[in-house]
Amino acid sequence: MPRPKSKSELIELSQENFKKLMTYINDLSTDLQHQEFPAGTMNRNIRDVLAHLHHWHTMILQWYDVGMKGEKPDMPAKGYTWKTTPELNRWIFNHYDATTLDEAKSLLFESYQQVQKIISKHSNEELFEKKRYKWTGSTSMGSYFVSATSSHYDWALKLIKKAFK
Image (cartoon, rainbow, N blue to C red; front, side, top):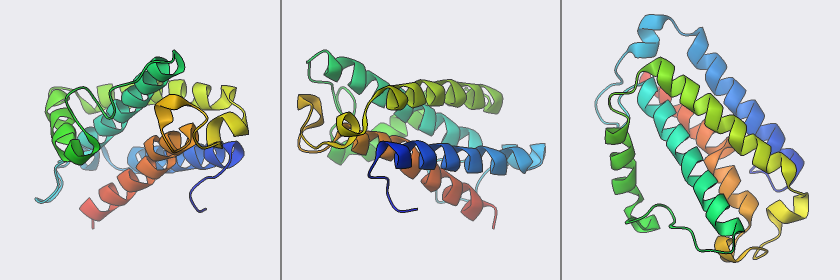
């Protein structure tokens, strides 16, 4: 399915891609789930990837909370710009270094549910009308949710599969 352009497509693809990702991971042996990826990627294992996804969920939840109050959220995060996203991702990687795989799975599932609740409570227009909310700038709120959900889950699954080829 191409990039979602409606609430129903966003819900469908985000849930579908999350399920594909988690099913793929859970179908791997415990050893493979903990195996280090080949050199060359910042995220060194499945735990790193899941913690990364979780943290991006928490960031969009924060943007949403701040933005819907009429305030301007720090996007992508305080002290970072979209151009310095690689540095932010390095910070995320280091921040979750002591997190276990089981903790990362739990954190991700919890933040996934929170994001799904927000998506579900908005109309198609609220999600996909560009410039509707000041905090989203020239884009739509849905665009941010697509990036933090369906597109990000697809990236994660491809990264993990590539690591095990």
